[in-house]
Image: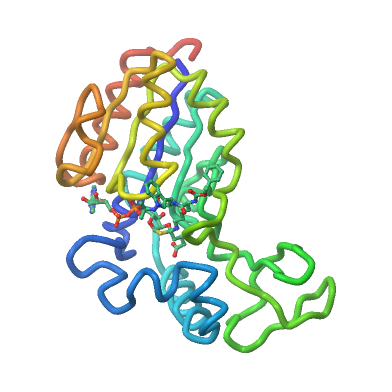
Length: 235
Ligand code: BJW
């Protein structure tokens, strides 16, 4: 059984990482257009760098919750037949033990040089005007995907969506494309679709099945179901 799981900010909420659009979410203090567009970065790089530096420091103490751990358990059973596509820029899936993870909106722990295109581990706070170790330019930015930029690894994601038997979206509002459209792609290729979310998302109606509750409860229960269905033998 081939499964693609799409995760959003809701899966990390119980690890203490704020979501974007819920009450008390990240954008309460910062308007999304002030920090998540290339234009905003060009206009006020220091504010944007400080915003991501603060999130990086906060994320460093976050630990995976039962939802991340359950997906890692599923990967141990399914191997290459499970792909986790995350919109999150934290590393909680990796901390939990998942290895087949696509970070379609980038990562907090890498930096991107706008001058030469090199990617590297973040050398420290980027607001400190860090220098690119490859070309020497003071042009490092967070390696994240802002509005209007092309998300990472879309070709790999499309192939996985076309080949999967099940598509599951966990803790994502369905407000941001192309991720919000993955359910239609997967369904169009014949996959069964399931949404796990605290409440209705903007695209709930597109799923075959919707379950409401905390990811930390819903995901382990769903993983148990899948493991029981495929049994202890070959995946
Ligand atoms: C829980 C829970 C718990 C809470 N348990 N659940 C008009 C129409 C269609 C598209 C467009 C349009 N105009 C422009 C576009 C495109 C644009 C877009 O989508 N705009 C929308 C505003 C309409 N998209 C883009 O620009 C993208 N690029 C693009 O399209 O390139 C063109 C292209 C495409 C394809 C091929 C070639 C070219 C880029 C989008 C980049 C998004 N970037 C951000 C910031 C990343 C860096 C960072 O983290 O700072 O990504 S924005 C932000 O939103 C972040 C997230 O990954 C993303 C999605 O948010 P998410 O994860 O869904 O979080 P929330 O907070 O919205 O929702 C949390 C959910 O969890 C809620 O549902 C809760 O209920 C739930 N929840 N606790 C379970 N405990």
